Length: 256
Image (cartoon, rainbow, N blue to C red):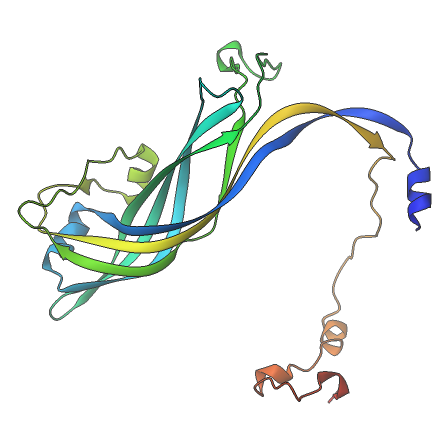
């Protein structure tokens, strides 16, 4: 269908309630010497270990707090706390153990979220659950971290292991045990890379053109003919021969 035909179907302008992104940014964080926390049983194994290796890293969750900046109208401070599950292989003298550790990375950024003095109320919420302030919402999209290095460190006499972190109850329940922070002789630190996208959005009413209601454009497939699907597959030559720039795939017939 031509573009002209598409625009000829324009019927009216309608108002929709949707979320508008006011600001967004991408971050690439190099996180160096981040301490790992272990539960009591896992920390006892770390105390006996001669070396460790961080093998896996996954994100448990991100805690996000947003607050307006009083001296910059329309701007907000966004605090992000990332909680990671790090898979550690602890090597002892004769054995090895696979452990899970908690790593926490925190950062703060400033983003534009516009202004609104109106308060929002909704018929599908009780009065106690109503949102009294029209604060925009901050959203974080994050990929799994990339482990760059890891080390097992001896605690020296004068070494400061940092403040005891405040860990949400959901994270503590995830590891099913209480964490050890102080009075340790060894601790694990890792260095990793992290990619994330943060955006800030508000609910707004927008005027948009309406063309028609959305209708299905094709019929549902009631089933798959496995023989027909198999016959239509190309022979996977790359699985048998290393790819080469001089090899012409299009010259090979489908049925061999």
